[in-house]
Structure formats: C-alpha cells, structure tokens
Image (cartoon, rainbow, N blue to C red; front, side, top):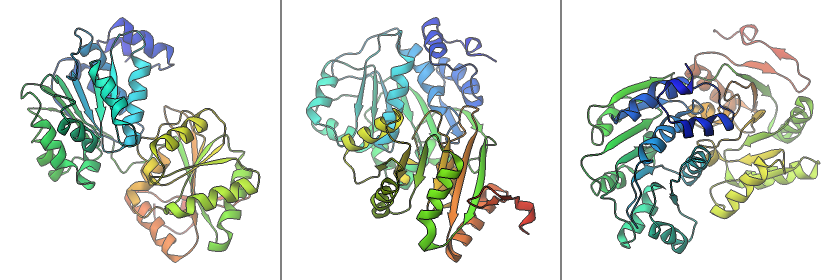
Length: 385
C-alpha cells in the first residue's frame, strides 16, 4: 500500500514525497484512514514505528477546512515530555509545508510571553505538556472549548509520571463531542481502564509487541570492567567507524564526565540530560543533527521521542536499570528500514543480571562481541534461545 491509497490530500502527499517517505508503516496504514473518518483510536505501537505521522498526517487534512480564533486552539496534542512535544512540532512543520495551519508549543523552559503571543494569533494545532498547559489555563490565556481533535500520546508515561489527573482536568475543559486519539506503548487492563475515560467506541490498533526490538538493529554485549569502560567505549567507536551515535548513561552526573573524556581523546561529543535548560537541550540536539558532533551523551530523558535521522549507532555505556528502557534506547537506530548497531557494556555481576533481564524480556539472547570485532553468537554462549 502507498500513501496515496490512504485518502490523504494532494498537498500532504506532496510534502510526504519531498521528505523522502515512500511507503506507510503498518501503524500509518491502519490508523490514517480511521482518523480521517473521525473515529476515536486506541493505539499501541513501539517507538520508531512511525506513530507520530499516523496522527499528524490525517490531522492536517482534518483541520485544513477551518481557521482558529485567538486563544482557542482547534486541536490539542498532550505529551509527557518537552522533548516529545518538540519532536511532534517538528513533524507538523515538515508535513504542513503546503497548508496554512498555525501551531504553538507550550512546554516548560520557554517564556510565557512568547507562548501567549502565539496563542493570541490563534492556533490550529496546540502541542503541550499537561503542566504548562494548565499554567496557561489558570492565567486565562487559553480556552479549550473549540478543540475538535485531542491526542493523548505516550499515556503509559503520563501514568508513570503522575500526569493522568492533569489530563482528566484538561479534558474536562474540552467539548464532549470531539475526536480522541489515545496512544500507549502498552495496552494492558489498567491502560484500557484509563483510556475508557477519554475515548468512545475506539478502533483498537496494536502494532508489534512493545518489548520487541527491530530486526534492523544488530545488538551486541561487550564485556569489560568498571575501570576500563571508557577505554572500551573509545575502542568500539574507533573500531566501528561510527558516523553518529547516542551514548546512554544511567546517571546525569556521569554524562559530563564521559563527554569530557571523549573530547580529551579527540572524539567530539555533546551532552543531553534533564537538568539542562530547554534552550541548551535544543541547541545540543540541533548541533548533533547538523553533524557538528558525532557523539551525543544522553540520559534516558532523551530515550523516548528522540528522532535523529540516519543514526548509525547506539552505545549503552551503562546497562539500563529498567529492561524496557533498553528497547527505547536502541530504537533510536535502525529506523525507517535502515540498519543500525547497538552495543551494551557489561562491567560486573549487576550488569550481567541486567542483561539477563533484558534478554528475557525481548525473548532472545544478545550476541557477545569484543573491541576487535570478534562476535560470539548467542547460541554459543550457553544461553537458551
């Protein structure tokens, strides 16, 4: 199936074509016609499946027939983090090239005055984190009674971060007659109960298991020691001839230390973590995307929603504390049909137990490798497939 088979307008199709997208992903193929019909959606798809475009593309056509009034957005997209909100805004900007839709981004770390000025002009698409949106509501700067389409993205993270009560408060300010698109990485019984508060007779769309890792990513475990971890990482980077990579650390305090170590050894690197200001994070991401540095050393704040086109490698300097974060981390590479490589450094018993938990969750064992490129297939490590 092609994008032109999904019912999208010629303007949207032209933008898609110019951005280089050829075929819709499974969730886009299943979701776009349903969203264009005006039906509620309850969707589950892992990171990297093209979920964002599955709602942004049809929303552009849905909203193209009208115009927004001052402080009264016509659609609302709620996300748990600033990073994800910014990624969705970037998606809209690209796909809206031939439509005159207006957009505003309400996230922390940005001036209220700047955001209020955008709202005063009227916005067709409002993308926001719950806390910042409620701040504007309480200041009387935005009214939600004209919202036609509501998107609740990464609802599982909303729940984990304690945002569901805020989301309920926000939806209480919306018209009862609206279209709601609800997305979560998992759709267990608890999430179905939460979704029932927001959607009416939704079309349920589930794509792949949330614990699955993409076949396009070659995964490796590299044994090392705590003292040798930095040297091992540098050796891997040099051996792999890395084009660009995200390097994940578990602790924010380790990010600056590792970045400095890489720089001292001639490997250009940037940092990204939750304690940075929004402008500093945006600056780091933009520089990385422009190729001003090959390495981005990041905490898990960047693991979800981070979209770097053509990322060649992911390195887990630390084994992630939660097995689920492994999937989100390595999902930054091997996207859109491209191949990618992911290496995880194991430096002790606790790390070994963490890898065992990851392997159990993803349903397969990970090949072992050394810094010289020698690979020991998982079936030869004595572990069961």
